[in-house]
Image (cartoon, rainbow over all chains, first blue to last red; front, top):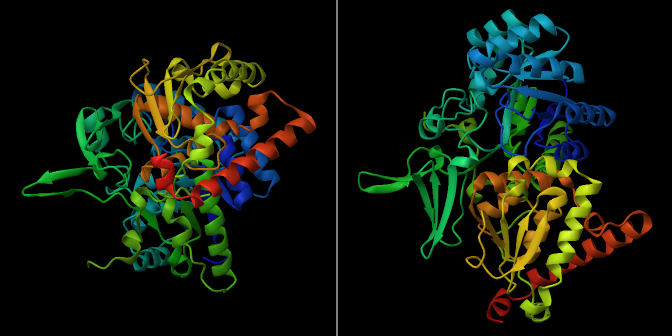
Length: 331
Length: 182
């Protein structure tokens, strides 16, 4: 793909949307205040009126808004997803990000003028899967699962004719996206159906003389000594004892940071770079978007790489960062 | 400003100016202030939903008193109280005063502060998340809490926010151990 690489940034509230736009986002992604998006947390997200106002603000400042309707509609309540799709189109969204074929089909048939992006929740990582979504629903862009190396992304881009969007910063999921059952096993709620991983009502932190214990629906998932960095209270980032070893059984609490690989991702044919974190605040969004804006502009203009790791390290989960699967070394 | 893992504690000289008895007027003043804010900007409290009646104990670790807050719109109540354990509450949020104020004015990222253990929370996590998100979207400025408008509001915001920023720098530069021992 040619053209300047697009920086896609998160917003959980109207204030954060404005912060992302003013910090230099080319596009902002956000969702409605219900189960239709995968960040359905208390106090987060947009009412229809806030979405319309947010889109007007973004357009007035030269940015796009991509509306995430990326959970899977339940059989008994599909109206909620249909209404969200209709509202996004009516608000003037530049694209809808969806994973469920029912949502994709409704958008394609009822709102053919609105771009469709395939959510990472669809876990489409092969030319065949992506081709199916492109041919069936007119999907124009696919958000890539965070399991591919840069070489695999380059090969994939040579085999498809839709845009690709790759995560460059933020939380990591250890599972193939859209197929994780850890949260629903422990709490009865899942990111895919209810839009929430480790729902806050199931999370508790208990302090005692030895430190802090994190629990999820009664399961102890970690203990932190005083001053020890913490991560999100998800089972995949929990610390458990297996055999005679205690450690992070699934994945360390660590943030993806592919700031050093912007040029490589562009050379691999990636159209857009995505920053994760719709549940994070204005401070995070402003700082991360500014840092990546400078880095992307430097990469586009052939300038010296911007040192990004030090700038955003303090905002990382667990205070640690990784390039994830992009720089895969174990094969 | 990023959230580092350094603690930014009030200097001992400032702490001495804020003994428990001096805090008593803060309760009624903050109650009036929150209720006034709710009348002027009711949508700010919508994001709290069912959690508007939760009891939040805000415990600045470098002060000798805490605040018990029920952010229930025009019925909001703020009480000055002793440290946790002395009053019933649903949530405890604990951290240095300047750090907590940084979360309130949006200067600092609450999640990053939590990751680095600069603040701690326990109790009803969903209420904490709702409060955090409501505060994030509110974009509160000192003039909002003081009920000021126009030029007076701009002067108050510049003065108070500038003062807070300077206080954070001073506190960060001061030896933390001295504040802890005082």
